Amino acid sequence: MPDPRLHIIQGDITTLAVDAIVNAANPSLLGGGGVDGAIHRAAGPQLLAECRTLGGCAVGEAKITRGYDLPARHVIHTVGPIWRGGSQGEVEALARCYRSVLALATEHGLRTLAFPSISTGAYGFPIRRAARIALRTILAYLDYHPNLEQVICVCFTRADWEEYMAARAFVDPRV
Image 1 (cartoon, rainbow, N blue to C red):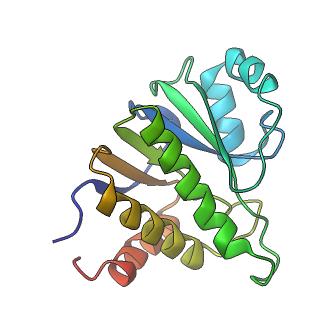
Image 2 (tube, rainbow, N blue to C red; image 1 turned 30 degrees about the horizontal axis):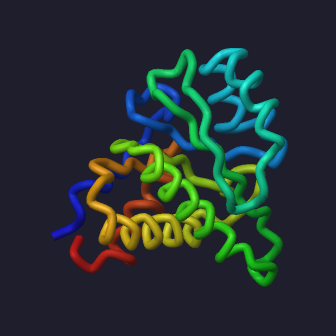
């Protein structure tokens, strides 16, 4: 039986009413393109003001802010690796992003969390590999942390959703 707490959907992460959504941020945390820009636009200028106080974020780490105008109460920002062919520690760095976010969510008592596909846009991480890393890391965390009631992987495109669904079958034999 697959873990019922893990969901994979296609949609817009900025519309979800969860405890926290995850921002695939750049190291400055000051907004950018893709999901980062969409989250900053939807949250309003207060998010940028709070992010300015955080001093940036290193690859693989995570920092939390309020959600402001978003339906989510918080935003957890993480900086994924830029894909450089796979021999520069990108796989471990991406897994570290997911672990850092999950640990921060647990530390803050959050129960519901939504992830975008980290590093697969402008940072060029291949979606198939990224989806497998994401799901393997999330499922391993859920095995030992019952406090998380729901983790949603939000895919912006149908093609990404299909990759995540295929990855789930690959990494979770219970599906």
